[in-house]
Length: 247
Length: 102
Image 1 (cartoon, rainbow over the protein chains, first blue to last red):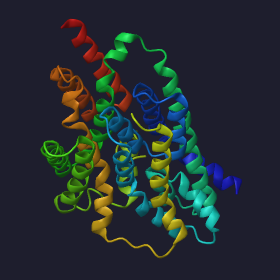
Image 2: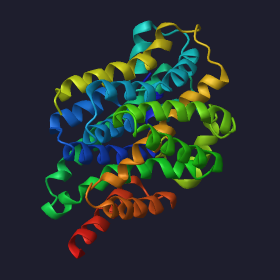
Image 3: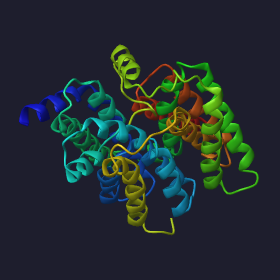
Image 4: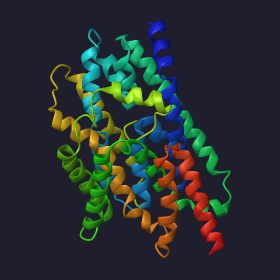
């Protein structure tokens, strides 16, 4: 058991570096948006899904309602159902409780790492999840400490930070495909159009659903493959595991 | 914010855990068509797109150039695969310069 757990942790080290960067950004931005240090760390510890947490922080600053934030989180994290069902098929001979624990910190990275490993052990998955989870929560904590160090002139210019974080997550993962770039532009325009008629936070949710629906027909299957192999190969080339596709 | 953040975090945690846990509970019984899978995997991309635009223009409602220039700097760096934190720091530095100069 220990051997599997450790090799799962070891296999996750490269991905942890990408997770740490996202965690630090979340810690920094959440504090700036008005969350307390406790709330910021609690969010990372309980949700463990970076892009949805950044989305929630962005929606708070845009004045969204509680319901809009939770609904948006639901949609952006719904993809985990696909990854989880693929992982669970491999976890033969585990108890329900074990699977429920394994599902808790399951993310894009641990899905890819576990699917590619030739060790189907439950403890390999748990080791991978644990390494990623601890890096994420710890780096969020480090991010919250950094806000206290910022002078006022920096804080005054902080409005752009959340958008820079969105761009930093989105653009590296769409540049490989012109179709994805077009889809992103179309979605932004849909949102712009909808905002003339409905409140901002709801137009974001509607635009992301409409955009993804259009994308089903616009984007090639290979571009958004469920096979983790291509993603990880590319990660190895670029030495980076950040992006909307991750965490 | 006119709601407790704890409530938001709890709600987010629940709606995030359900899709992760569902296949653990009903193992063998979940099958998705390729189109549904693709739809779900595209949502993070379209969500980021909708969050960025047009919100970025209204970073400083009275001065759209703050969002446009800062966003462009972050966008170029992101396109060149710079880490998220580099994009964030560069965008803040750019806006600091604009505020200081004008």
